[in-house]
Image 1: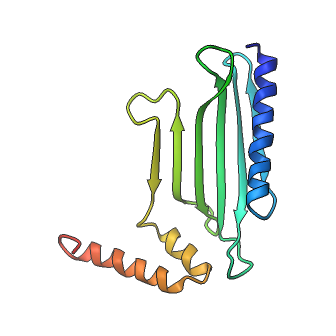
Image 2: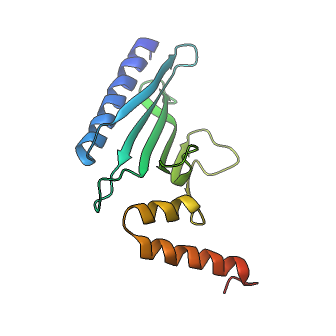
Length: 154
């Protein structure tokens, strides 16, 4: 597949991914970092969307998705070289991820797809508290404290 065709297919994919997020979740989807490397035949882009709490107008979390697109092994179709989906706590400068799913087509020393859940995250407790889930946030903090102070976490 030539570079122009790959760029066309990748742009169509990016537009459809943006539309899917817009159809499923309220608020604008921002697409950034669109880049095409014709030498490597790679197209990359990032999507982000603020996540709003149902209990308030707060938007404490952010959904971030990033894609790197390539041609498949036959060179005839578009494929995902790598992707990452994260829910991040927005109120922090660093925006720590609470949960993320990653895919890497050519991974060697790890599974090609893997899931990370940061359950001991302060950001998760703050996110729950900011959405009106103070009891769940408190229970989570107590569970973390109990695990850290007891020898076996029991």
